[in-house]
Image (cartoon, rainbow, N blue to C red; front, side, top):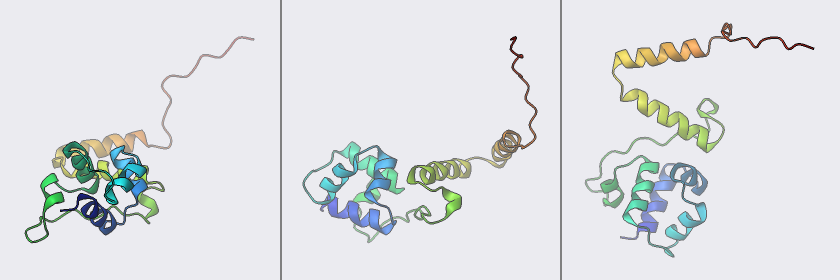
Length: 133
């Protein structure tokens, strides 16, 4: 199996650029390019970073497609509600993933906290003292 070819297939199937992978993994896009073009062979730890960035389990990175598990859908890239930069979209994706792993009571608690923090007419509790001239 060519790891670079597999990485490129998975990345392109999710409409991700090498820059998106850079944001998600912390690995430079030039390194990803070297891997995809077969100039570098990544370590297992690096392949695990790629698998996490692509939203798949490590073993799914090596599957041949016959018994491949379902992978989660790609992150929306054109939807402005999901952020205008790859890092914003990835941050929003992490939030959604965390919320899906919570039970209903915890999710309601987080929602209440977010609503309270984003209230427009919040009262400032700590007003700075006026400066003496």
